[in-house]
Length: 418
Ligand code: SF4
Image (cartoon, rainbow, N blue to C red):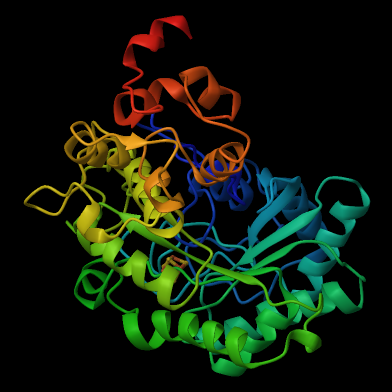
């Protein structure tokens, strides 16, 4: 099973190595990238990037600071839903934050150089980068300064200025701040192509150990519920692009002992009940000078298995009870969950490729939604008799072979001919 293109190409899991320096952080950014962005190696004496406190923008010279900030911001090559690749500027309106999430490099009280853009400043910077051909789309988040509502207003102002004053019609992914109000969620959905709020943890109990001042139901889940309600009940004619944006979320994986069963239970709820387009998973990586600095980093294979399982739940008709959970509610790291299911359930009961319906086809390793459609279409032309027939349809025939029948016969002996 292949992973579909992600908006943030850098967030596609890379299980080959244990460290992914580009992993998207809880606020939707790579910590390394933001360290570079907000900790210039040689800040000018009057450049005005205050150290170790929440910067509200006062007391600095905006002109040189703006130039320096602009040149330090990171551009990601990102694949949008549908596969189109663009240069995406991913940044924070401010790296100052009054919250103290245990995993976050921007948590309050951490000795850390902070920087703040005003809405008009950020809109101008992005517009200049767009004109210079450096950035085509914007992913905008923020630390929380003055409460979630006030911070969200500044994010909304930024995009509003960008859309109206700078006439920007391109891609915008806008973060919803914890505690935002319904009207702010609505306005964000009218302006952006994608909105997101990170749940971080799968439930109230786990969140309390990860981000003690975030409130799971009221601050994080409620905005996702509003987004779904708005999409279902209001016409999209007042949105900037005449359609509602997609909604996504993200979990920190492995920071507080949560199981895969807990994470996937919430994943299933938000994708099926609240119609989120997808869920992102970010393997925990300890940040120095945070309460979890001595906690072990999570194995990136776990992140990878969660992605695979989430796609099985969303696109392949699998349910939670189909997942090969251990007694502790964990997915085995050494086997793709779809292959694990097939080894238990299909080895002795292979699927006949000439009779199976779409749901049965999707249970076979090597066959995805496109492959299943191709098989159903090809069967109208004649019988599928050989692995080569599957291969011609884009199926990974070697993966499917142990679990299928072709015209009543097991095809394993044909594998060496491929
Ligand atoms: S709210 Fe939490 S995760 Fe977001 S920037 Fe602040 S400390 Fe970091």
